[in-house]
Amino acid sequence: MTAFTPGCTVARYLARRLAELGITHLFGVPGNHLGPFLTALRAEGDIEWVGTPTEGGAGQAADAYARVHGVGAAAVTYSVGAFNLLGACGGAYVERVPLVAVNASPPYEQWQNYRALGMLTSHMSPRPESNLDVYRQVTVDAQVISNPGLAPAQIDAALTACLSERRPVYLEVMEDLWDEPCAEPEEPLVRRERPFGARGQALLDSAVNAILTLVEEHPGPDGRPRPVVWAGEEIDRFRLGGQLTDLVEATGVPFCTTVGAKAVVDEDQPQFHGVYNGRASHPDVHWIFRDWATCRIGLGAWSTSKNLGGEQYVGDDWVMAANGGVRVGTSYFPDVQLEQLLPALQDALVKGYGSGGLAADYYAEAHAHHGAPEDRPAGLEHHRASLRVSGSRPSRHPERLTYDGVFDRINHFLGRETREDWTVVSDAAFSLIGSMNLSLPAGGFLSQVSWLSIGWSVGAATGAALAPQRGHARPMVFVGDGAFQETCQEISTHTRLGLRSVVFVMDNGHFYGIEQMLVHPSYYAEPGSTGRGGSTDTDTDAADPDFYNVLHPWHYDRLAAVFAGRNTPATGAVITDTSEMEALLARLGDPTDPVNAGPLLVRVRLHRHDYPRAMAYKVPKPTSTA
Image (cartoon, rainbow, N blue to C red; front, side):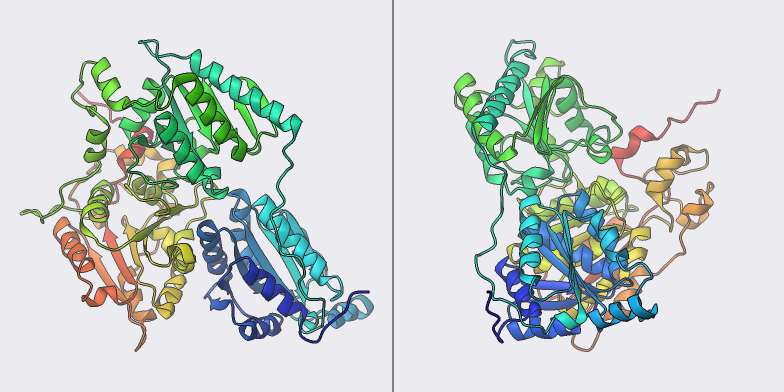
């Protein structure tokens, strides 16, 4: 019979198991049902409670923390809190982020009263399993803990599933169980991987041979193989950046990444050819990825609409290794795990083509083959240089800011001017499209590219800054004005914790620019618009966007004063032209400047008809009139 000791309770058991996973911060919004757990958490002393203004913000912070650290956690109270956390948990489920959602429910006695008398108390629903049922849709394991004797086994099962499946789990704990005694933790938690035996080896060998055949059947005009690797999100989620680097260095094969895997390895590696995002890619990247490379090898890449950027399919000259299987052309090999595929593919390519035998500069090759067109880079380094502007001195004649101008200038700042480390956290829409071509070190970029919850970045920056692996880096957030209005309260958490974040709110004249682009792209080419980079004031545009995309205008920078306190500084700023941006970046480079003492909230004023150049493929060309 299991011995119960006074030193361990359900609350202490869960706190110890979370600490065992290396979790240093727990995000959430408190409630009376959660109080006993938080008291025990503080008594244990290994995990810091981070209260956030909203449950959604807690989930966003835990999501980003998990992306950096490997697992994260959020805790809320029943129904009213749990349903607010659900959206963030859904995003973590879709994007394979290991997140522990803790939901404190009414005590066992109140549930018994409901069953006997029909009496509901705060936060309860006439459907007792309402919270459990919805979380079952977005987790790989969901447990309701109502018996302290079973609590250790249920907690361990859920956390093991979280580690093994790399997706969220749900733990619902009744309030009066927190302080009940239970068994001490015994064996350490470990990830349970799928077994790899003779059958798996045979499937792996077949998949690798099929990939080699695909490469051989798609040579370039000189007869040499011309594959390009497309590294994706699962390289990040499964912590395979080292294996990817080994493969690239051993074979020399050029590679791109998806947006979601941006900066999964250092982007200054010689074979890194850019971020491929379908038709929304930088034109140079699209050119070499689709038109010059003769076959594409997706490793951990997801074929989502965002990753394919306007393209609806992958062709027969593609390999897609993700979600536990490998598709090679029209053949499919199930149960081939990425962790085994990468080294096996590396060995096969080295054996077939020699060490470094696939090394190439596809930009230089394509440039030479096509007769050196003026609008194409002469080599990989030329392409990389073209992504940066000099930006070292303010223009004599200040020019209005544009999306492309801002990100080009930030690229130069991050690469050449700042001495600090930064984690770029990009929101959905134009911010994501604009930031995907920044040149960043490994781990320097976070985004949510499939779920695409607007406003995710503001809360996510909290988790990114507190994760031990990136605690040295300042968050730099790019978020649209509509997205920021969803989650602006999370700047309060930045301020309270003294995070030295820089949040660029891309204010394009108070409307949802990306929604307008998706529903009515001709708006950006209508007569009367000034077009990209124009100088007409945003309040006097000749053409108005669709009424449902219009936002109420805010003075975003002034929110810094709302959240600042006597000992918790926060600064707001507005920039409209290139000279103001130069002045701001100069202040960021001065460690003694007060803007670096706490969060900096920057309102970036842009023209309503401006958009990132990567979205030009969606805008119809204006028809000329005689």
